[in-house]
Image (cartoon, rainbow, N blue to C red; front, side):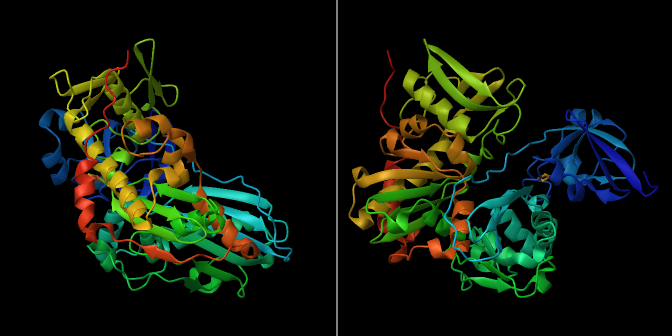
Length: 498
Ligand code: FES
């Protein structure tokens, strides 16, 4: 180890990280799964670490955040800390499986290679595609290196508005991914297609994100953005076409446009829906005749960020809750005891609570303690259930309004495709049980990384169907939205099962 570097050991994983002496922990730990949810303002406490060996001086923000006994026992906010000596830190690391896509798409017959990239807020997935055959020749995934600047898009926007350059960060992160994918075949790459949400699109393209920081979230720069390999400093031939696909509007990005292609909506005779559940829930409904889409502020409950014992879907998270023979069973991720609950576990737990009568349709916990025990130390607080009610009401009301605008009924939807990782984890029965999705559960289809699949379809442009008329519905501006939202706040009347 060189004299300028210090070693940090992360526990319980045992991962060793070398950083420059004097470097901030926020600059070095995110890629090892330490989260900085508020982007380092020192307000959220999500980056707390326990110093087991070495020392980190107590900062002003530490003093405001931790009680004296926690400070004395070595708790610190990683976002405020500087590494000057070797450290052993106990911390909550998360590991996220990045969703790829194994679908088989027909080729174009055109010679050459292309790269499809899904630039997510948390993760990046890239695939090398043989344009002639449609075969995927390589896959690279990474955590988004913008994570030190906040886990959600609003924190990223605040960071950029404060003068940080997040474009260079992500361009640089993609450089080695592309180099690994190309592996000496760079000269054969003729096209790169990127998709992502509107904020990722703007940040990557150095567009002004200020319009996305406040209602009505209208940006004048939603269109396709083109780049040269030189300006991104990517190891690709100069004539290679590199484009970030256009957003659909406001918070509906090209990840949803790609998803619309991926689930076959533009060619479907039947009416389909695509929904991506996150801090913003994006919904698209339609078929080959017409497609409507909207985004609705669901809040952080599905990502468990606003839940007292909420955590990512990582080791120790309750990811599933079920009931058999009158007993409640919890599934915990990894070889660990339960230490928190992730979004899918939360939806399941509340569905089970409704089924048993422990949670009432109003959302009130029936036993008077304001606590709903899930597994071991993991409990839901009354406030957690309220957060989930807000989130599910936003999605359910959004669906109702889009269906009303289309003149359709829930029964007209042939399939409801759930995009992304959360869609893969969530149990359709539970989503229906809490009234998040007001459809028969058999029609709900976890659909994986629809953004990446759609990006590949855009790359293999011969396979891209024409789009029918598409319309962005501004839900908040619809006078009916608030009424629908309020009426969706309660949970469905299930009653205690016998
Ligand atoms: S307190 Fe929020 S990231 Fe450190």
